[in-house]
Image 1 (cartoon, one colour):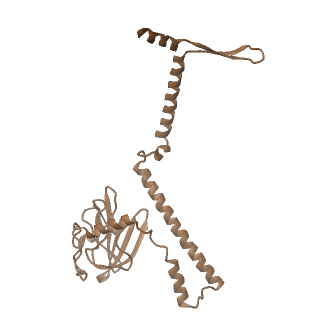
Image 2 (cartoon, rainbow, N blue to C red):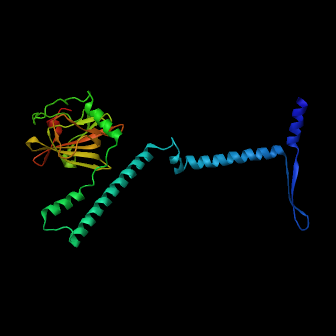
Length: 279
């Protein structure tokens, strides 16, 4: 057995001469002495070098972002922002196309500018582009929040007293009211994906969205109060909807340190929410 092994080792170490000849003169131009063991060693070294080269390229270049499990949170946030920006740009383009089509119809006489009904119809057409429709999963998620027993004060009657303020979000105030520095409300830090409740009964007058602040809700309340809720990940209400005090209207951001920006206005003057609400 040992002799067979030694014989195989000798064969692996036995060197062969590889010659390159000139076809015309049969003169040897190049030669290489190589054993099977040397060939195997060179092949393994070549494989390791190729593997190391591609590993460096993948791990230390943006190519790693395309591999499962290697994408960073910052890259994922950039993907999300780019996707939202693309959706926003598409919405702007759709609105511009509707505007151009309406303007063309006015110029060509298809829309009678003297007719109030024709103008109203044209205006309604320009407002058809709205928020992106929620998926079934998102609708189910919002319904679970609305039906959850953990949300307090959902049984408050619709005719709740306007002077009775409800806490929109239980948490810690990390930014105080300071109108001199442009801070017209307060920032409340709470658990991510927490329900946000209406501080007063009223009517939703505006819902908007920006990449920096997420969803924002503006409510018109009794006694000339206006309440503003910003930095929301999703909303549970729609424009012109009547809301009662304590009703869940939105969900806070899903980040690890979620903050709600809340403003309270009366007669076009900003008020300190801490003077009216216990947080």
